[in-house]
Image (cartoon, rainbow over all chains, first blue to last red; front, side, top):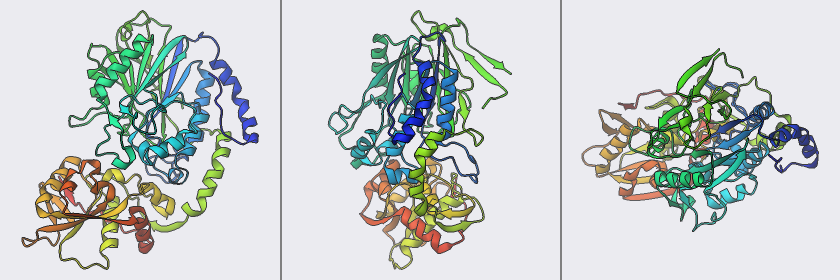
Length: 299
Length: 235
């Protein structure tokens, strides 16, 4: 993976070049036969760590610490993918003041591979999002928002395909229904498409495109008491999706949930809470041929 | 961070229908980013000018609290404080012939207030949105819909009102009243958070002041934040 351009002044750019070894490792051949997927959701403009007097998360989170952790994992693992499931914006004065520019620059520095849009990423309107997006050096994937009649047309992809360790990874985004959640002014002319139908279409397209692994970046939410479409419902009613990385409900999953899909095949769902307190990690082992389904505790 | 226990979930090779035999496992699936984690110093240096430019305005101490103000359904001290602050601010110098109450949304309160000094930045985190104040005149007949919403949602911040046994009680409301005033945000008045009952409003007046500016003003006025844990929503 090539080092992405990062908008820093000259001095900082020179310092940043010291990280090149880890990038060099990532671009070499697929000897590890393992893919490490790192992911975040609902980071909500939390750039700094939570304050020391926070009752639940004292001193936790912070982008600079997240970046160091990601860097450490990239040094340890050969094939790392970094993804975000939306709601990058809104929550601290950084967003009120800099309108998402800083969040995009920092995610670009950390070399995110893709992200999807959450409902709060509409909070400064489509023009505000587009303005911030100019600093994002990674694609946004949203397949069930039709932006064709908006200024975001051609700016947002339905999906993307990346290669790691010799396998093709298809990634698409599914967003939450706009009505009643996003003010009409901020999503004018965006057409919401059925998430299950669209997800099936995307997964099918990616499968036909030769993807070995298909990941859905979802901002639907983990689960609801009513009949609202959630990640669990999405997993049950679709096929060809292997992994759903979710967001919106700020759910702290102690471990991923496994749901059988419409063809009785397992789908893994994970979500990391919110605020950048955690980094999600899923490893995919391409080397071991292990069968069956069981839980192994390794002390 | 290394955990004592590493859980590995092995999924069958059938996970991939094609010839690939892939195994998903997580080691662990969630990696906490704790205060002990080291930071990327390049990124810290990059962020510093941004944080420095915010510090002067955002670090200004405007109040103190002896306890944590938390957000917790069905009602909590911060939910009550927010609704009370808005209601108090808006009705301080107003005489009304109709009852008035306040309704906000729990999802709109984005962060608690930690005990100790309360800064402008803390109020931005509590209310990051630029939502403006809305005065909504509603027919009394709409109240059961609001009660149902409150019951189903699990609780929202309210002031000068209470919910018990699925019935919404507005202080000062009697049989002679045909309308009530509801003070809320423009986001909700426009049907945000699926509050569809606002479509039945008689009038909606949007004011220029933001909820955040009012919270800041009321926090400054109180000095020591007033905590009220009254159970306004009983389910």
